[in-house]
Image (cartoon, rainbow, N blue to C red; front, side, top):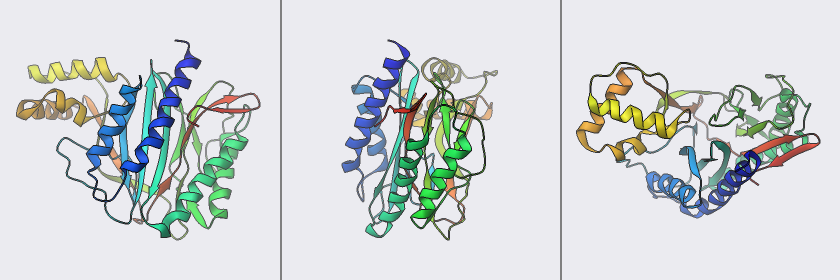
Amino acid sequence: MEPSEALMKAGGIASRVRKEVVPNVEARRPVVEICDFVEDRIRSLGGAPAFPCNVDIDRVAAHYTSPVGDVLTIPEGTLVKVDIGVHVDGYIADTATTVCLDPSLRGLVEAAEAGLDAALKVVRAGVRASDVGAVIERAIRGRGFAPIRNLTGHRMARYLVHAGQSIPNISAGDGHALKEGDVYAIEPFSVPQNAEGLVTDGPPSNIYLFKKKRRLDGEAAKSMLRLIQSEYRTMPFASRWVLRRFPGPEGEEAFSELLRSKCLYSYPQLVEKSRAPVAQAEHTVVVTADGCLITTA
């Protein structure tokens, strides 16, 4: 499959799953059911998860996925961000939606969506990332809300969700010029105007990344690391995926050995500093000479 075909197939799957998951996000629903629905649906449509499904509630802006045996459920009256990554042969689509279970917070969701819409209208080859950020910030502030200043969109490459360059959600920041053919995830985050507008590291997210091969003692740990390297490569994965393949105390000990040996990087949850609710909207685009192609539309 040609790269352009793979990008569009991944984007089509991501878009379809993003729409299909919304009715599943309701109060008292176990979060693990939402994660499993998204990831199983991606596979059934011919893709693979590019990262674990993120289900981020209220003040958590990013990076929560269910562990094995998760008992967390969706609370009443919350904002729930569902962040979905799909790859086809390593070519990635990244998209997110915010489900609003409190009508009084609907404006926050609309502000994030307005930021995304504004960005999509100005993205083209030669435009500076900081100029896109300025447009996002104006759109969000124009709705009476504020952007999160230390979260950004990101360039993606084959088998790389984060490929080094970013698109800020404020006017300052990365000033590089966008290039034709580059693939970016653009993802504004909005918070109330009186919030801190920053995220800080929170508890572990249950999301991991292979970091480095190191000496291991346990045979189960060695086997687990081989699985991680072969199946997930340079992309994030969930502890839930691995421990379902290695169930029981032996699997838990093997995973702990990988962490102790620093073979794996553990992502933290990203939590709004003032504990304010956060909304998110996200699309993946391919930059063109005169605009952009939205793969996840």
